[in-house]
Image (cartoon, rainbow, N blue to C red; front, side, top):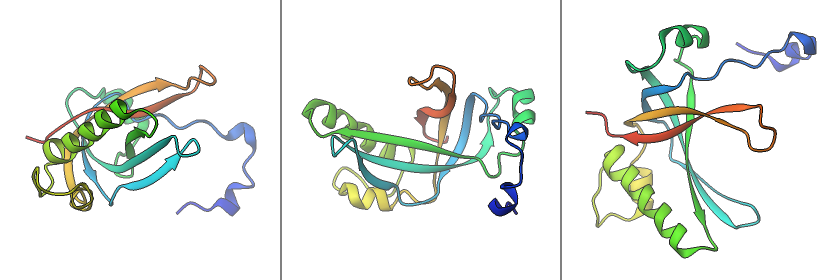
Length: 154
């Protein structure tokens, strides 16, 4: 178990950035009801899915996976952003969310099920997630592992 009080005794020079989840495809599980939030003073509404990594698929580099360590505790985030000031972008995000829920996570529901119920039904549903690395636009050096495309588990 990790303990922050003990970590306070760690020398700054001994702290290194942990490796990122390697690039490639993974089978993931939607663990919780997605978090709903608003950012940028209400310009964007967001829906965040917390995805637990269950297994790495064939295209994940074995050496990078060994360097990363166990994926048993690896979590990824799949975010949908809704631009509250641009109706066409909002509708595009809404469609992408519907597609993710019904086609990729294959939640219980259909075109007549309201979005709130679909979100609630997303718990414990699986899909395939593509992990890619992106560079932070603010500093140009820091990279993050993020979910790109998703697909149903077949």
